[in-house]
Length: 350
Image 1 (cartoon, rainbow, N blue to C red):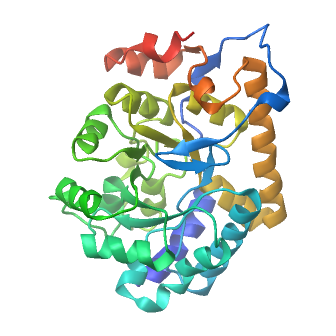
Image 2 (image 1 turned 90 degrees about the vertical axis):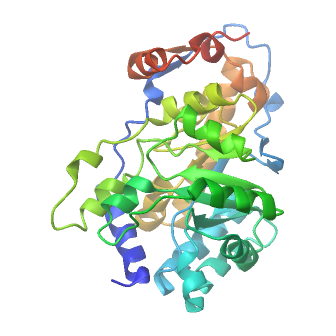
Image 3 (image 1 turned 180 degrees about the horizontal axis):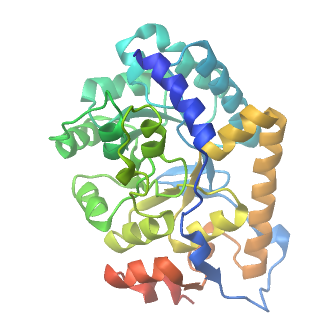
């Protein structure tokens, strides 16, 4: 099967399989503040991804590209949304365009539309330094995402089976590129050991890509004649993965993704230590089923809702929201206890 046809299959299966919403953020509760002492107008949503300043802790995460005219149209629509809402946007894996230049238009359209915005290039962990630089140059990217998708590749009928040398390749890219490098999971979460290894080679930004959103094991299993069902429930929930990353390295910039769909979930992810939140499948579903205007309205609703939550908590900034006291319960609490993650550092704040 051609790579472009596979990209189109991924879109169709991602929408049809949906999201399990088992991200673990329901285990997080805020401690009510009866005396917030601030006004809604005092709240600022501005935050940073590494050294990149962004208007709010929401970005459009990597989805597609390399599937011909259909993915070019989707990326054009998403880029327009990003421009109108002033959001960063990541493209899908650009390996398709690196191997077949005719596919580059489906990625280049994002920079063409979002001329002055923040755009993330995207490449797999199999990429060389030269390929990574080509991905950045293709869309004049402000940062590069390197995605880790071991489980997806193993379940994918035509996927990779050799993951040796990944850390060395990422290190070479980090050392050679002049733009920030974001290492991201695609829905199976990151452990504190993984984050520690990445920090050790110079990575300063991770997107934990937790379990609970679009499940690429389920997507790839739809394409198999004999399914590997054991991987459909494989992964670290988003809430846990944020905590694992924070426990590994308090100084690393953490991006949260994996089934996040509401302002409340964004606030909870930030309270655990994330500086921004990526949304992909949920936005794609709205765009394809309800249209561009509906997606813009949903993003604005998220931003408005987040400001209201921050006002209720008495937190004027994203940094203050990261320090809002929370209570952790359920599976997330059990996971933290078994993994010897210091709950007091995450929950008992100011």
